[in-house]
Length: 143
Image (tube, rainbow, N blue to C red; front, side, top):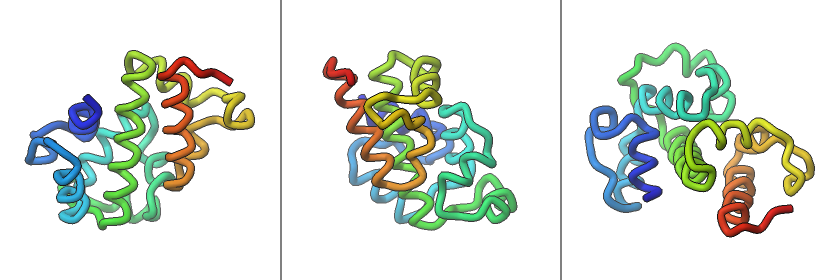
C-alpha cells in the first residue's frame, strides 16, 4: 500500500512517467531526479506552501522557486522528497487520510518531547524519528 500511496502523493504516473512497483523504482526515480512538479504535489499532500517545502529540501528557496515545473531536481533533493512522500503515505494510512495526519504533523507530540513533527522532518534522522512514532501509533502504542 505504501508504494501506491507514494506514487499518488508525487502526482501519479502522469507526473512520474512510470508506475512505482517496488523500491528499485524509487531508486530509479532518485537517480533520474524527480521534477519540481512532483515536489509541488508533495507540498499539497502535506498542506504546506512551496516555500515551506523548499525549507525541507537541501536546496535554497530561491533556486527551487526559479525551477520550471518539469525541471529535474538533483539526487539529494529527490531522495528527501521520496523520504517525505513515504512518511506522508504512512501517515495517511495510520491516520486514515490527509486531514488527521496533517493535524497531527502540526501539533506538539508528547512522544517527541512536545516538538511538532513537521519541525523535525528537515533531515533524514528527523524523518526516521517521525516514521518510528507513526509506527508506534499504528500499533496502538501511545506516549
